[in-house]
Length: 342
Ligand SMILES: NC(=O)c1ccc[n+]([C@@H]2O[C@H](COP(=O)([O-])OP(=O)(O)OC[C@H]3O[C@@H](n4cnc5c(N)ncnc54)[C@H](O)[C@@H]3O)[C@@H](O)[C@H]2O)c1
Image 1 (tube, helix red, strand yellow):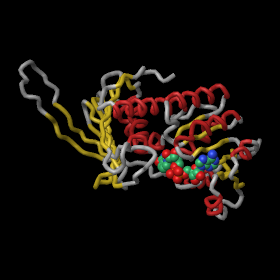
Image 2: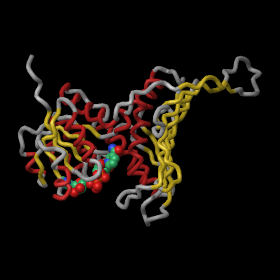
Image 3: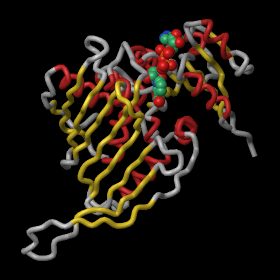
Image 4: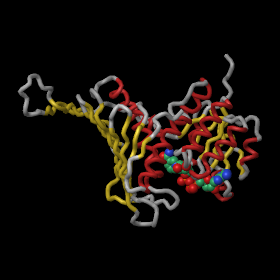
């Protein structure tokens, strides 16, 4: 049997997050870390010993000119994502872009369109969409186990990391927005957001966002880096059952509550009764979500299939972020979305 040639991957941006991606692409069977690229030579020097078979460079053009490099992973600051992704696509490389895909919907659309036109795979690191806990929640939603989804809400809170160049919405929101869009599976038609800046002028530390989906499902976000709690939680309320995905739990990440209203049988039910049944916690695969994401990118390239978080999904999330930002700047005014990202 012919050995399958490993896919050769370059990681651009080797500061905080890039090395995690580099480690995974270096270790996953079927891929090789061909290049590590950063403008800062001290960062390259820090990682040379860990990746002895990898080329190190400050020059992205050197990476893009290498015909043996199949894919480029972009882990640079958000304002650079779209331009670097477009350069990589123009060089015929598959691209994996950190979240959010871009700072504007127009830029995100340009990347999604360019990838389609070039016939390359484009994936956005909507990490949680491939988290085994979210996969379980999706299964509970799609099989009807929860009944009809009424509403869902996410809490992403911590003390820090306080960012200077982006607010809590852009820093924390892509995770919850991408998960909500994945779970509900419908376009967002209207969003609004309120928030406040306590630590730096013009940079919201806390944001409360609302998404209205096409069928009337409501999503609510509470995002903050100024909070005593460390919470990474998503709760989905269905007509039959309710489920909580709590990523801070090590073992019990998913809890299903068999709770809900008792169906009214006659016309005389003045009192709406509620039912409080079993609570159970299904077993969740303990695989590292980032490894699953990297593996999914490689599989999508090999199979020629669209990744679950492709450029268009990246655009849909950026459209919600952009509209929420507009709402934030306008005292929480609802912003209507076209509802179709393509
Ligand atoms: N998925 C997640 O959970 C997660 C977590 C953290 C960060 N991130 C994302 O990862 C990305 C990087 O985050 P970070 O905290 O490591 O950022 P950072 O600002 O600390 O580092 C970015 C690095 O990119 C390098 N860089 C910038 N332009 C470059 C260019 N043209 N060529 C080569 N190198 C260049 C910089 O020198 C810097 O070292 C961001 O998009 C962030 O949103 C994602």
